[in-house]
Image (cartoon, rainbow, N blue to C red; front, side):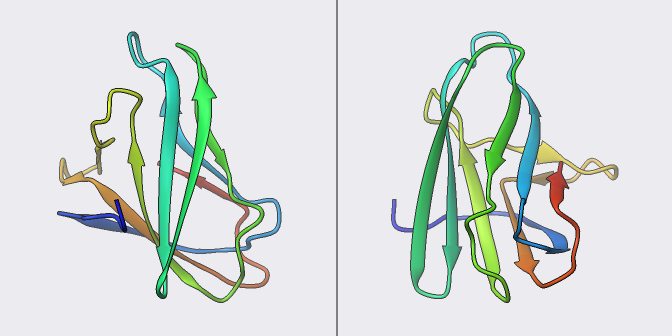
Length: 110
C-alpha cells in the first residue's frame, strides 16, 4: 500500500515528537500478532510494525518522527483489516492525522 486510503479521518491536534507514543487501546481476543501503523507526510510513506499479544496495549513509539509536519496515519490489524475507532458522537474513523510542533503534548491516545 502506498499510502493510507482513508474514508474518514480524525484530527488529533498537535504534539511534541520527542518521546511521542501513540496508544490505540488494548489488543482483543484473537487479535494478537503484528499491528502496523502507516504514516504519510508530504510525499513520504513510513510503516512501523509492533508484535502484540492479547491484552497488550496497542502502543506505537513515534519519538523518531520529525517536528513541524502533519501526518496522516492508518493502523492495520494482524488479520489485514483496518483498525477503526469511534468518537464520542459515534462517528467511525479509519484514519487519523496529527501535526508535530515544539512544546506540544507527548502522548496520543484514542
